[in-house]
Image 1 (cartoon, rainbow, N blue to C red):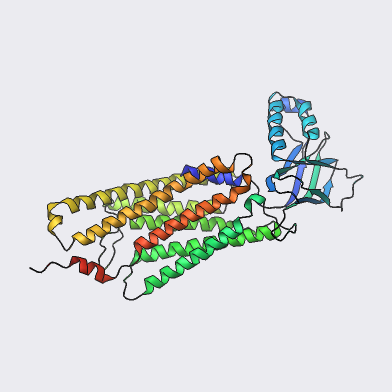
Image 2 (image 1 turned 180 degrees about the vertical axis):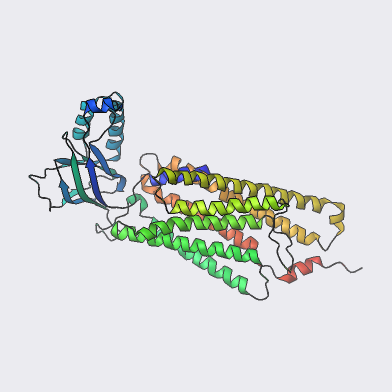
Length: 446
């Protein structure tokens, strides 16, 4: 599950849509004062990255408006290659405490475009337009090249060419596939949820609590896909999303994970697949203390996950919630693995025993139950390995130079695998007509 965290960080490294208000105060520190503070000249006070690595194609544009500053500043637009070399040089120079060289580098290093703004000479109401001629991941940096305090305000908008040819698309080139992906995924889960509800409401097929829990999984997952579609649609049109959509998207993701974990906890093992009821209890957890530990971990996980969904990921406290969520989720997944293997071993032992071999009324039910566990194990393993597979795709396909256009393919892969997992679970857990088991358990006439 550590791959989940790493994969999220990889995907979050690039900007998705840009329509930002910049408000930054450059606080000047001279070289000698920094040495007294123990910074050794490594404190780069005179630069601020307004946008980092936003994917743009030829024909796009960067708009900077509402600029105000106390002293002259520069807006530098770097391609991915320029920004990569620039960062390396800055790191080498600052590590040597070369303060003057750092100032010269940040203010004169070659960039795809550099626009100077002097508050005494430039028109503050004018809009600065930078056309994009080369496809790349662009970083916009604001630089204050005078040794003075400087308060800077501006609005930055980056737009790509939309499907209709107009320069109105606020999503990055690498994210353009998200709208069709989530449109298809949302429609697929709506259809799956509808079919599951119809199948469970058929009177001739009895349903149990576990079917309701899985139905809840489908509903929450469908709502999550819809919120994501809405979120990316708003980003595409305006470059900004509403706060409730961002928080709602994160909360829906955690709610889906929470309900799916609840389903896994309750479905391993499914005791008593008879026509009367399904007892959703752990065989492995026979003692009340063990059950209380599992319940406490689950409740704590729900609290931590929901808190993490509403906090700022850049905050250290929020990062602590992320680590706590990872630990709790790992503990529950470990319990599910142990319970699943124990259940399969117990059923196999019963089927191979002399008593079970000749008890014809129980053999078919036990065999059906064993096949169910084995089928569920495949879905669980796919769910367990999915974050690692996504991380490998990010590291092996998305990150190398030249493949940044296909970040959306990572989302597509993850959604397709999750769709296959839910489809497999639906087919395995589909309500069975009672006559099926009754025919299997009928004894031969003597």
